Amino acid sequence: MTSEVDDAIAGAQADLIALSHSIHAEPELAFAEHRSAAKVAETLSRYGFDVTIPYADLPTALCAEHGSGEFVVGVLAEYDALPEIGHACGHNIIAAAAVGAGIALAPLADRLGITIRVIGTPAEETGGGKVLMLERGVFDDLAMVAMVHPGPEDIAGAHSLAMADIAVTFSGREAHASAAPQLGLNAADAATVAQVGLGLLRQHLEPGQQMHGIVSDGGVAPNIVPARTEMLYYLRAGTATALTALADRAFACFEAGALAAGCTHEIRTVSPNYHELRPDPWLVGAYREQIETMGRSPLPRDREGSRPLGSTDMGNVTQVIPGIHPVIGIESGGAVTHQPEFAAACVTESADRAVLDGARALAGTVVAAATDPAQRSRLLEDRAARALARRRQGISR
Image 1: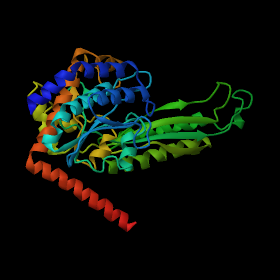
Image 2: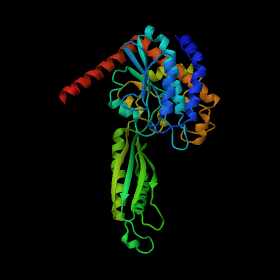
Image 3: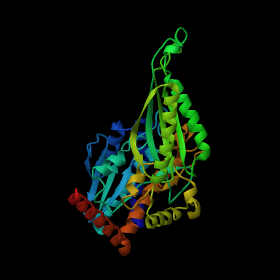
Image 4: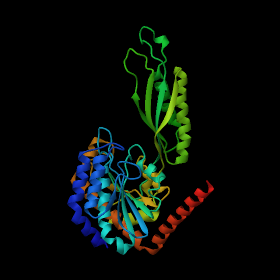
């Protein structure tokens, strides 16, 4: 069915590239991707998909469905952007490639015995849209799930880090910084001490553990002792277990800062914890075969784990459902994701090729899984086991 996939994507090429460029031109932040979600929904609707938007009680989530086969496939679209630097993670490419894969698979759905769902998932950069959708049962009946993310190189079996997204607020007491500083409790000092502790802790971190953040609120005026300071921090580790250990040590640094400055502090979760990616080995292999036929040279298998891609809420999904989150390479002139130069690279000719190649590779991977009797059975049996586990959990409650 390769030629039919190619023909369908070629026929939709102009629409897919236009969609990618249009999303890129109007970047929107987490849970506010109204124009982007509408563009994805409108394109899929024109190609015969039944579209539901909003979806899963999220205004900017959507589900577009075609077919009625028992083998239900989810192709995920992201479309949120970053503050100030826009689509420097290339989510416009992710969305357009997902739409392209859906369009390519729709005419084959009956022959393949599949139901194809293009699922729009908001708030990946922060907010954990997929985690919320996972908790609300959006992915329960999927046999497999797939998406593709742009980057400076092709990586079939991409890995990521588990992550905690937290805000730390220190509370002290205002005073005149010159006339009566002794009356103040300096929340900015608490943050400074905490960051010194974090800096010293870095020497003793386990491999793969990371801490990085910003001071989002440092006070209101130089002559007022800051009564409130807030830090936004990401804590990362190779696994959820290692992340818990890191959090215990980092939280001690925040507590030490508050104690040293005579302040109080509060730690709150900004986004649900992101788990590490657990890509399905067979699906990774099928995807690798697809992109190699396109003349792409993905990173060798033995080096894939050496290039973690930051963190993604797709990790939570792949912990539960067989899936993949490969990287499709674009020419970025040495820039990497989350740089303004990478945002500019995401609407170039190379980026447009990534949209089309990514769509082909995702569609081809689905065809391979749906037509391989052993893999189809494996994936359907996995879904049945998950359903049984949920029923048993419900009874035990």
